[in-house]
Length: 173
Image 1 (tube, rainbow, N blue to C red):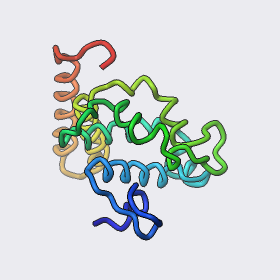
Image 2: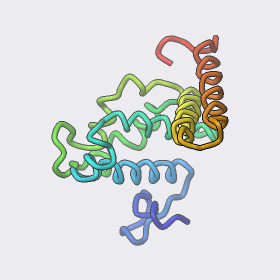
Image 3: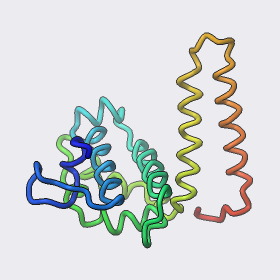
């Protein structure tokens, strides 16, 4: 059990007695924890999210990645997860203190509707490319004749081209 996430689990009668019974419960708890850490109040919003809403897209990619790791009945896109776990969940709809322009975590997500119908598989692929990009950036300063940086850069370009040229990609996905 992860004590950090338990407070965000949906089952139980008090904050100290919460439980995640399913993998989707755990993923949802992780999502709420991330939202709270980045957007929980105006201080967090400006310090961690740098005042930017685009961090929400990274959360959406992470969710797609996590949801793609196992089959979940009827949850094939972020929109499926949203409908079941976010849309009417007060932890997503509560007001964010001191943040102007966005009323709730749900409001932040709603501003990125264009990503809602991307399949979990494709979101997972985007997440993989994003991780490669982060690794490339994080290794840019290593003093190994740029070998590590180039390795990550080549991996990133190859994966990006693979996704871009995938014949299974369709409009809106």
